[in-house]
Image 1 (tube, rainbow, N blue to C red):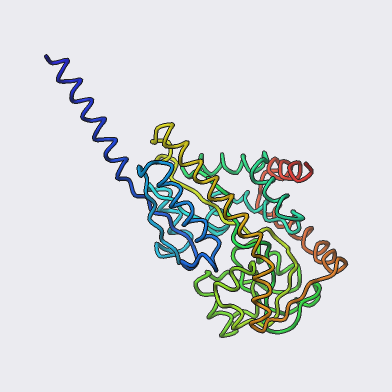
Image 2: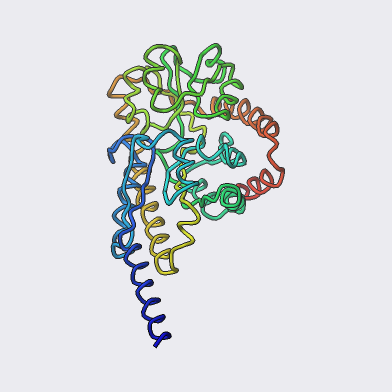
Length: 333
């Protein structure tokens, strides 16, 4: 009789556990507006929300929090470390935990989207970054999310065709690596949160900034910036991360369904993003921005100035040589 009661209790507990999972709602937080046309990260989040619910048969529901509603980068990452949450973080969110991620932002590392995607999807360097993040912070790296193409420079003072045109300008920086980049060009950089960028540019706290065309549109930066330089200096990406304890607690079928949803949502977002890059540039031109497309010689001048300075900066961060070597090997492939 006791054994039967124990079995019934175990079955009840299992059903209760399943019921909890069936009702599990997970917060997904990220930067930028809830506008799929202007914000590629939001488009990815919406696709992911739909696909997760479909593929897990409603066991998991994502609740979206765009526009940094749950806090800036540091706060959102701490929430992901300490509770069952998902977050789409920028370099500013990941780098305090894994500064080795800055290696992937080396200027002119990738010639096009295909090279960048292969580097993150298949490379040994990126696996090292993922392992370090999980070990140090209990956070799992789930996907590299494109946020609108390659980075472009904007400013409100003068057209920028080559490095010397940066001399004396003040730029908003997303993180310390961008500060180092601006200094290499003879400008200065000041970290400013995304939510404060528009006002900083409007009030001349900064003369310019660096973002893909999508973010320039999303933030209406064309209203306070005159010149757009398509230097394509860095691949523009953010990172879907999740609390590792939460992910490890799921059964194999649920985790597989979730991973499939992430991969499919990312594939959809990448295709849509790449198709819209030139449309976004044309839109910015229509809004009055002067579009500068540097020549091959001018791009080479940017590369010769930026790459060595950035490598020196990486060395100052005490990043293990194994990460640098792995990244170089992956790029060479």
